[in-house]
Length: 163
Image 1 (tube, rainbow, N blue to C red):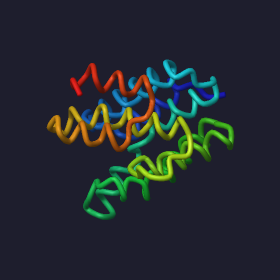
Image 2 (cartoon, rainbow, N blue to C red):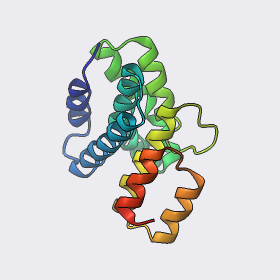
Image 3 (cartoon, rainbow, N blue to C red):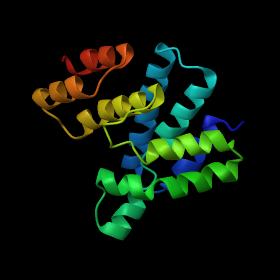
């Protein structure tokens, strides 16, 4: 089994010289890891979630290069390939690679959530994006009502943003 430290090391190297994006995925990882543990995920689910959290925005540079945009849709299109390459290089099991690349390909899609790992990734990414994007309380409340489902995610949102 691969370690999350190896994934982080590869992701930092991939995003070299882009401290803002490195800090972003590390914060998303911290929230996802915390929510997953509080929600009682199995070891395998937790590993998938952690890996997806670290690699969720791995396609952003390619999206900017190819489309001139870092929009979520383009990240979803461009992220799975480099994530798969990193995970294959590390010798990750096929089921982990398949699920992580699926999550990356859907991390800005809020319908059809098909697992707790997917749900937690959406929540963790939002917890970070709300701060980084300076969202107003009304926008945070709307997202809370439409997307948040886990007890731990809802509590972290409440304590972090007061909503």
